[in-house]
Picture (tube, one colour):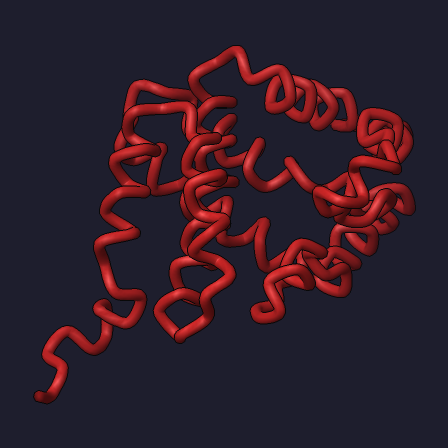
Length: 183
């Protein structure tokens, strides 16, 4: 039980670790945990759109994909030119005393290999979570995110991910609550 309690504290620390790419935008902020929640929710939506996939596996990959960052931190693109995070080692170390650690490691490896439809959808959920953040920043008047969007969209792997991204970009981020704007 102690190892599981430690795992929970380690997962909790993701609330305190900022996503580092927002520093380059000059606006926006998000913790790794906030990103992981949105990624998991997007994964849930994608799973509903693909009822033939292993929905639980897809959601688990979304939930676990950045867990290793509790040990490595979130490296941005500039940092990745100079520093290599050993995320595989981080995941192996954080799951080594966990009874279900091998299952967590398998999900992490499958996500990174991206050879299954569940892994492809989980990758798209990861990118769509970022697209949602960038679109929200654009809608609030920030200019930097606009330049990033084509690069993030290019990383989408599935047709459904690409279609959803197109709709996200056409939809005002406040439309869900403010559909009838006053003129």
